[in-house]
Length: 214
Image 1 (cartoon, rainbow, N blue to C red):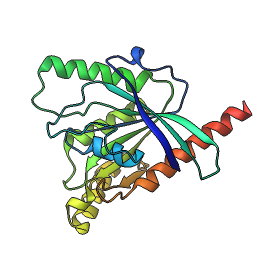
Image 2: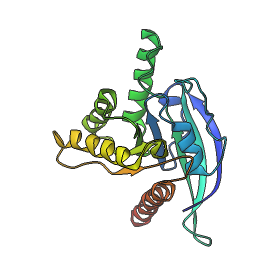
Image 3: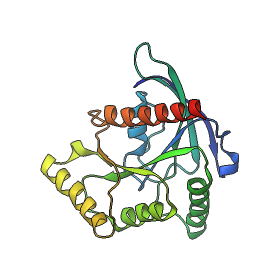
């Protein structure tokens, strides 16, 4: 897949304020400071599409971007939404703010009808974290399709990254019959970009084919 353009559309506090659900939609979410903005910029090939910040918890709203892509130089073009969701697990938020976040995210994940896939970002430098495991288990309970994206793989030795990724999957194996798809990435070295884009392209093509046969 080749990204032709990507532009910011709107920030919404409620799912009802989001753009008309007339395009395939892919959302990115993760614990605060997991490298979400950097990953989104890496995936889209734009340095400042999503605003990066040294302050965790900067993203507060549901941020929609419209992306235009093609499967190749002469392939048909597709338009789809990329969504930057507020991170979870930021301890300095007040109880009221956390409650508001939960209502916003829960409403979006469960009601957004054109949501194709949620990419859940996990910091590959660390052993499995309870908050990440709880979040993906909740997605599974809601029957929301998602993939795991292990970030910052260049910030640790390959052996450590591999052990942490396997440890997370092993934790899921304790209660799951089938494991979710996963990607190992580095925003700085663009590791995993082609794999994520190929997966999104496959999803878009499948949706297009299903639309044609209806």
